[in-house]
Amino acid sequence: MAVRIALAGKGGTGKTTTAAFLVRFLVETGRGPVLAVDADPNANLNELLGLTVEITLGEIKDELRTRVPESMARGDYMEMRVHEALVEAQGYDLLVMGQPEGPGCYCAAHSFLSQALQKLEKSYAYMVVDNEAGMEHLSRLNMTEIDHLLVVSDASSRGVLTAARIAALVKPLRLNVGHKWLLVNRAPEPVPEALDKYVREMCSREGLKLLAYLPESPELFELEIHQKPIWDLSPDNTFLKKAYNAFEKLLAA
Ligand SMILES: Nc1ncnc2c1ncn2[C@@H]1O[C@H](COP(=O)(O)OP(=O)(O)OP(=O)(O)O)[C@@H](O)[C@H]1O
Ligand SMILES: [Mg+2]
View 1 (cartoon, rainbow, N blue to C red):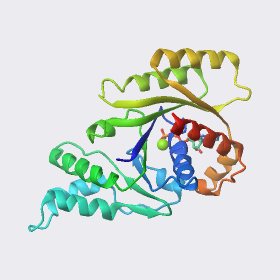
View 2 (view 1 turned 90 degrees about the vertical axis):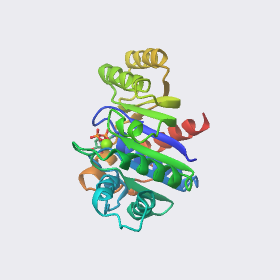
View 3 (view 1 turned 90 degrees about the horizontal axis):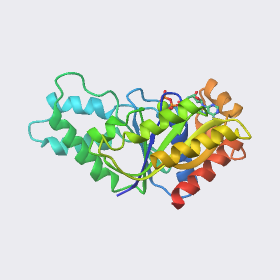
């Protein structure tokens, strides 16, 4: 199985940005192949990576109700379509979950999908999963074994408290997490002492390990407003260098 790294954190903290740079880091350091999974219903990881998505896994699940050829088993059909839904790129592939089903869920589709994903995962060294805040997709898909959960927070005490609460969801969602990390994004430099003290307190209370503080990056802001992919950010960029150091630390754990 691939090493699974899942991102979580409240809205707008930098989960997708971190996920995208983590994919770039893994590819550039020769640790691929990487499977990037966008499990946020409001998917935009593909944009940061500069990829176009044709079909989501949610759409494929809907097909299972109506479109499966008579001669084909549903599990085989799902496997075939999941392969077709893969967006293939240099050193990594992307899958997009899409919207969860509305009322009248065809629940068998879930288990077909989760089986197809487990099979697929075997071809990758790493899987990076970008989530919505609550991580529901992970438990719904039986993706309960997570090697690294990376909770992203903004640099405020309330933000850090929310991150700690999100980390605590691991239990009710019955996720089995190897390492729980906290990443504080857009932190002022130097990091205010009071913030650092609070961060460390929260970490020890929730069994989180402090991964790093990442700075606010004007260059990242520039990329964003020009809708450029994260591959365009220079390797000399401070945010990128600090993020890469953080990822090395994570993988060394
Ligand atoms: N360190 C940073 N410096 C500058 N801009 C940043 C930084 N981190 C994130 N951003 C910007 O903040 C915005 C939100 O980031 P991102 O989309 O990664 O957050 P998210 O947690 O995935 O949000 P959502 O909850 O909506 O999925 C983006 O416009 C991104 O470019
Ligand atoms: Mg996001």
